Length: 382
Ligand code: ACO
Image (cartoon, rainbow, N blue to C red; front, side):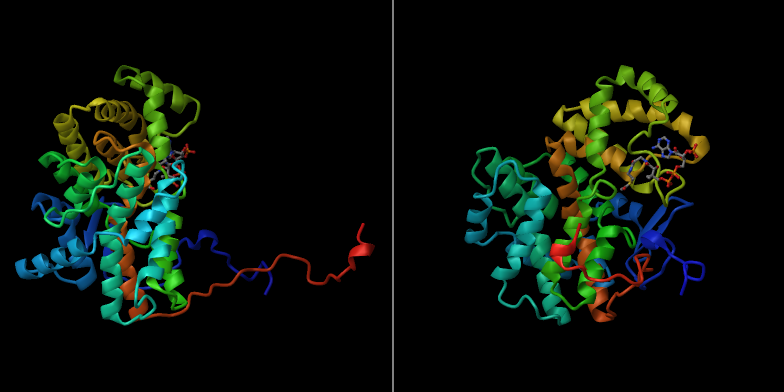
């Protein structure tokens, strides 16, 4: 095999490695479906994140009784083992919350009595255990680093409401819960993205689900994937005031800089998630009175889109997720972890598919090093 005869698909672009029945992105039309259902329909019908999780994991929407039982099970799994809480409070307060999440997810394997059993029932149990605990891990660390006591999870609140409650120690307003629930629904799955693929590669070796999700969190942290919001916050801070947006965008484009939150590898039109999140971000800004981030984002978008539409560059999901979460008081380093709070639904769903029909993922590389070299004893090396 020479490099003339081998085709190298760097980044695996265009390579199909598995089937999935979970979600499909229609990039040209700006459509996203979960098991056939357009994402807008969940938000229009006030579907809870938990319903979407159930749909992704079970292939059907739950009945009222099924949803109640599923929510009760998740709520019962929210609390962390005391020893894990104690360990979180030994971490450096300067730690990146994504690193905390990745570490604690891995740690939870040691506190599970049956972590390596890959039967479908046990995998669902582990999936619910992880999904239920993600908000608790993050809220526990976030409060500890501010010198605050952790807030015990409540079992009577939805996943979205309980997350906000544990972060702030008080019950959130209805628009805030609605916005975070919609955010969690809209980011729950998105085809074969990098973190989902990472989880599947780990599972492909028949390693445990804790390990696969640890890998997914590690992958989501990167700035080319879930870490993009950090650059968006920087951009908004640079603009500083909505009145500066036109000038900022014009100068940035003239200097061939990119406007963060605009453009997408797959969507060649307005990201359907961004349209909904824009409305939610505006509602939350009104409810919390923290309108700065929404106003900045809207001004940047208004300046950028007319200049970029000709290149088919439109608003992507990050653009309004960031002001939505910032106006709830979340700091910049909690944005990507909150993405993980949602996406763990998709990771677990993909892992259920992977373990049920597994094949070890083992691509090949094209060797370009020397074909013949010899060992030189250390005292003879120059
Ligand atoms: N602002 C200004 N110009 C842009 C932008 C942007 N945000 N995005 C692309 N362009 C321009 C490029 O300069 C290029 O112009 P040219 O043809 O004159 O050289 C043209 O559009 C095509 O650019 P590509 O990089 O080939 O487009 P691609 O579809 O591969 O890029 C990407 C997609 C990486 C998301 C890009 O649009 C970008 O960098 N956006 C800003 C960063 C961002 O928001 N990332 C988050 C993505 S969403 C997510 O991860 C959840």
